[in-house]
Length: 204
Image (tube, rainbow, N blue to C red; front, side):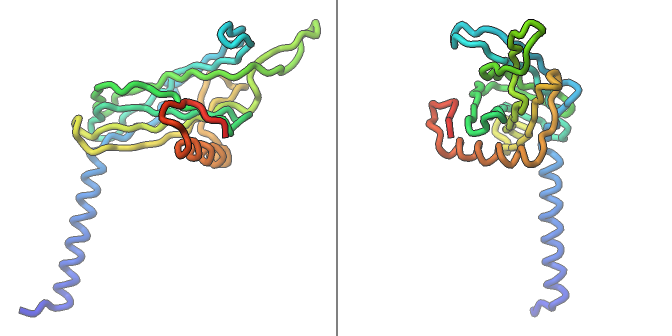
């Protein structure tokens, strides 16, 4: 029997709609981690590091994410890359161990940040002594979040989030400017392509 043009068009439209519905259902059952700024915070310290035998400026904090998706996230792993904007050619990767986990909708996960740089002179006190602190440009952080959807063997779900830490506002994290992300992204991609598997820092 001959298929008419109208029938063929109807068949194509039905297949398209089915594929679109399947994609919508798939997305609806995936985890979706959203950065929770109100639950994220940072602290700082400037002091002598006996291991390096120099004064360092250290920032540490907690970056929190909430699973706003309808899917359950299994074995979520955060892979961070960091660069001080005073020297964006030097990229740091912090390797974190993979652990078994299960995060249902509305549950939180967190990443504990710790990064330091050699302290910079940012002024002088009333006696003329140098005041040491952070370089003014701040820290850019790329967080790659990998999880499995709805089971340990489920679909791999990948997300990326960019975070900026600004020394004049030391207790908070922020969205970075687009031009900052562009610079850091190029440096981090170069780092990924050229690093030794055992390496956690690369000067480029």
